[in-house]
Image (cartoon, rainbow, N blue to C red; front, side, top):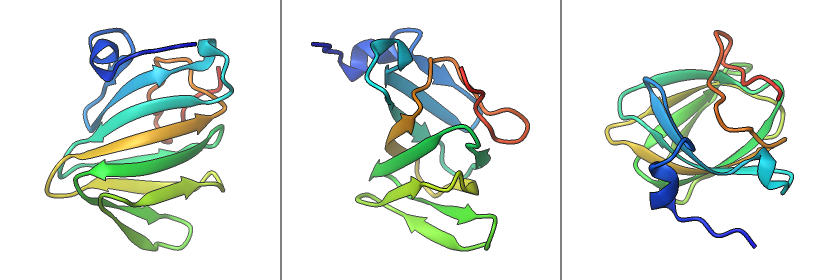
Length: 127
């Protein structure tokens, strides 16, 4: 059994910070579960281009607000607490933080190894 707290993960190398977001990676590839689990904060009033060509992701909004825009069809979806969005087609998108930070629970398949950040195309590399 693996037991971790968000607090201990926030105070470790599992916390990855970028200009627009912070990701606390609570479950990673080396935990051998077949997926990774993250608590991610999207900063207010930011826009991040993301295109997970190598990963599938599900994201559940726990608090805050924002929106996601799919670039293939320019549809915009409001994000608020209780919203789940699923990037099941490696969707190229823009993620926008709204008037307050968004706290999100995220699941990645295949799992991340821990230090990934988006490249110039919004992609995480495959480990």
